[in-house]
Image (cartoon, rainbow, N blue to C red; front, top):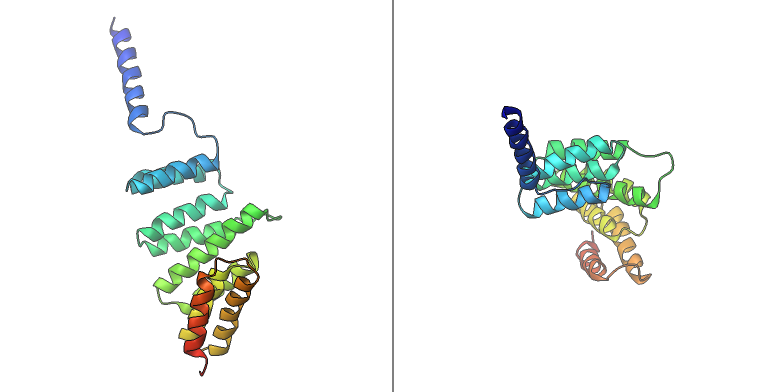
Length: 194
C-alpha cells in the first residue's frame, strides 16, 4: 500500500514538473530550442531562456546558433563580458566547410560582437569584427554602414566614405531595402569635406 502511494505521488510530481516547465514534449532540433528560447525571452523569463540555451549547447556543442543565441541573451541583459565570451565561442566553432546557414550564423556572431564593442566604445575592435562579418556576407549593407560611421568617428574619413559608398552600391544593385542607402547618403554629405 505504501509503495503504491509513493509511486502515484512520484508520477503526480513528475507530471506537475513537466506541466510547469512549459515544455511537454522532447525537443528534437536546434530550431525547436531556439523557438522556446525566443518564447521565454518574449515572456521576460531570462532564467528559463538561459537554462534552455545551456541545454541546447549540451546537445549541440558544435552549434554556432547555440552560442550566438546565448551571446544575444547576455547582450540584451547588458552582461557584455559574458556576451563577448559566447560570441567568441560561436566564432571558434567554424566547420571546415562553411554551409550558407553557418556563414549567416557566423555573420550574426561577428555583427553582435561589433555591436558589443561599440557599446564599450572599443571602436577599432568593432571595425575589425565588421570586416570579418563582411567577409562572410559581401552584401551586408548594415555592416558597411556601421563601419562607415565608426571610421568617421575615429577620423578615418576616406575609409568611412568608402564603406558608405558600398552601402549605396548595394542599394543600387537592388539587394537592399534602400533605407540604409538614404542614411549612407546623409552620412556621406556630413563628411564630404573632411
